[in-house]
Image (cartoon, rainbow, N blue to C red; front, top):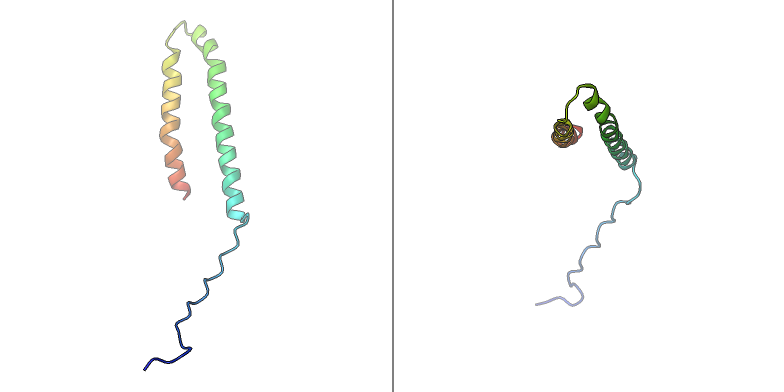
Length: 85
């Protein structure tokens, strides 16, 4: 026999954790901004100084320096990201 009024009532959903600005999130965002600014500044320094360096050494092979710089940055960035986690 079925009992009247004893239907299974679903349990209330657990309360979601507060979704605010945690210190870890703030530190991660600051680190990301600093990293991007450092990368931008270093690329600007290479681009600005390279013509003088090329003139000093009387060469026209400056494109290789920029290519090498960008390749190293592309390899190191994910590596540092993995180490950071």
